[in-house]
Length: 382
Image 1 (cartoon, rainbow, N blue to C red):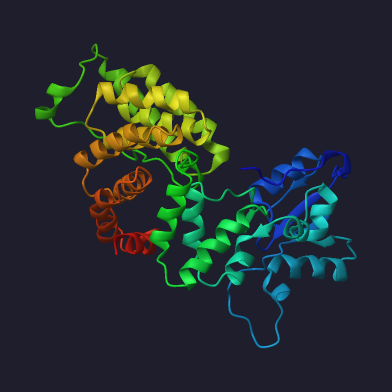
Image 2: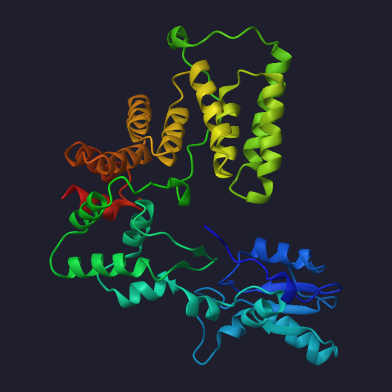
């Protein structure tokens, strides 16, 4: 899925500018916005001071903090108040611009431009009242609709997706269940759909090192001995990688380097193999991720994370029977892993095995009563 990118010929140089952001941006994440400023020659800071030259006010406002009667959203930003005070009291000329103005300055489409070109999810939900956000996300997961763009605050769809969205809404309004509508649509497009779990599903990650029980080592491929010193250094590198591997994309390469270093000291450290494979998977480097997951399974078949994540790859490759087997093995090893039940249920639905999916829809509800897919699981299990 594409994301907003600068139209380079229209960009203005930000050389010499020190830019600060306040409020939530609707188009770009804060990290992406800072990177864009740096690419155009400027610099960014977290707080407003006498060196600040530009303050960008996010279009999404400043959160849900209660305001006094008559107070405006602008007054809830300390950065904005600080910039206005410096301009008034110190005679500075800090340029205060809206997100819309900033987008024009750096050459990316403005939020209003995107809304004219595409259809925002929040607008679709307002128009089609029978649908919820998780309904639309599930339609995306099934490949029935495909977003063209995802911004910091919304997801956008092109005109061709409106027909499917309207059909689902109208059929629910006429009394059909969401479950039956989805199954009908999937059946009508059988052979054309591909589930893309990389849109919103993170692979299972190993957070702490664990050693298999002695009575389970009989199934493990015994590696050559590794010195205690190297094992200790490998575990130290693994822990350093885990700290960096916190969901921040800017730290991913450092985390991957730490995992690779751990594997230099101990090539048989399965936890490092799995987490390094996760990094490759997040970058859509499926061949590399698959090889690492498979290596981990050969070395230690009892890590359910490797089986589950390998199942996600098979899904992305449309190898659904193999994905089913991987999810099944992951659940044999960890029957209480809610995400495993959810993805196995989706797999079985895609294969036309709705009855077999029922126990897994119910298991997901029981194991994750507050999970993001619980309402859908309830609908599919009715």
